[in-house]
Length: 247
Image (cartoon, rainbow, N blue to C red; front, side, top):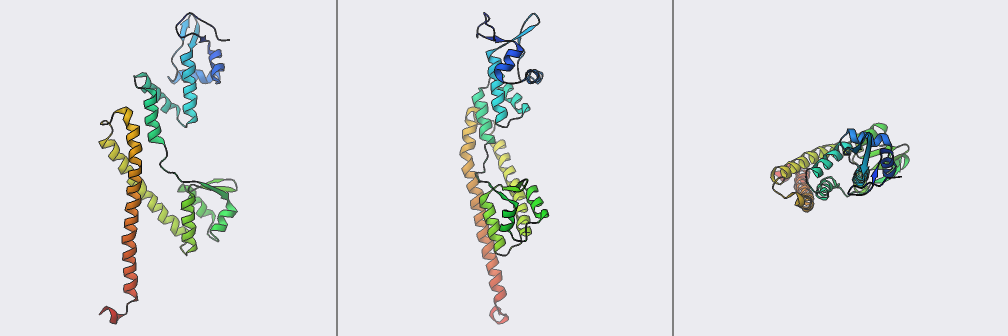
């Protein structure tokens, strides 16, 4: 049982009591101390006594791990907190930066169902290529496609007569271009906004910029498609015209 001591803050714990209260093994608690994630205990002779603040820190670490943070990332967040930054502000920035921009809905099906969507096209090499590109995840006899909308668009193209291999190649090139465009957008943000915006406002600012960035890409691609389609139609019509028509 945790012992009562006459220090401000109330209860203090021996290492085993703290581990039990936090729901972690003692070896994990010691590891956190080695990684500077947990402050050292108060020493009374050879006995280390931990406070409720240590318990709160352990629970915070557990929560951050559940959100997908690495221990190194948690250490940096806690270091920022200890340097005087409000942890809510730090976590708010982290959430704004790491919240996925994509709102696509994944879809899971069996390999047999995937093969039915692309008759004669779902060969092992095509599946492996889609996995490498991040389109598919394979779990035994099931696959998960990251985007229902993209899957439906791919099905439409293949059913119209475009080979799946060519769709995947265009998708690979598009993904590469989107990566470069996203990298430029991030550089623009870091070059012109980071340092000029108050830390507490950075998350809100980034959230406001998200729709504009997405609209810019979608509108720009739609406009480019208009130009390319018109040019292609012009070439087709020109090819249909006979020599006399072109004279």
